[in-house]
Length: 335
Image (tube, rainbow, N blue to C red; front, side, top):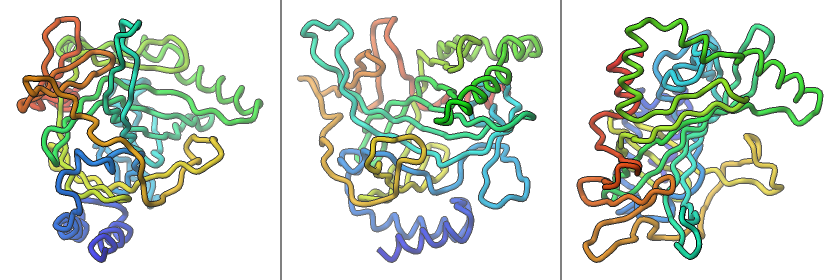
């Protein structure tokens, strides 16, 4: 308990920076006392987690306001959403981990598929010359236990959507400004790219079978049909605190969120509480006779063994190993 208190105090004193030496030392001390031997197989993994450590995006815009995290829209969306130079202030980043049961694609007695949702939700305030826009980016993901403390993770797409005020007048004003800000944004962006950048993007899209956003509607979405798997290690997990380390070494500290009553939901309908109970255990323990773990992804069933997930039919989603994640490819292609 004291190690946890030391970590939370160090993070508060140093602005949530997990890279600060004192915070890093507090993390190291606390992870020695993790109460769970196999956290990826514990029901405590499920729930909504609010990120306490600062966001791990490059290119933070420093403007003197303490505690504010500002980036361009391109930085927080892997340059998938346009206009990518819009400045955004981030709200509380959330990670939603949930066991999802969905009906089989074929229906009619085909049974139900189960998978573990691993979505990253980023509330945004987008700043424009004519006013601010409330928005949300959701990165859709799936996860599966690779070992007792390591999760495999694959992100299958993302979505940028408006978050409108409840009053009718503000909804209309917000909608008009949204349409004006994003009018033909993707067509304009394509026209401004150099030939080299277009070639690089084309390579990345083909490698991962990415369907990019279009100018249709107010909700913009991209899909990754061949996502690259990454991994993260759960270094500490109890009923209200989780510490993870990504495959690049970055550390994230998160606190469990319990949705408050009233059904309002949204960004303001949650409180930080403990404890958390009642979830199903053994979500990834569906096995067949040859001991291959099976878990569906976007309606397609994947086979898992100790080396990672594979599929055989070409039309199914295929996740490759964490050598080249989506963000890694973009950094190497410099787009």
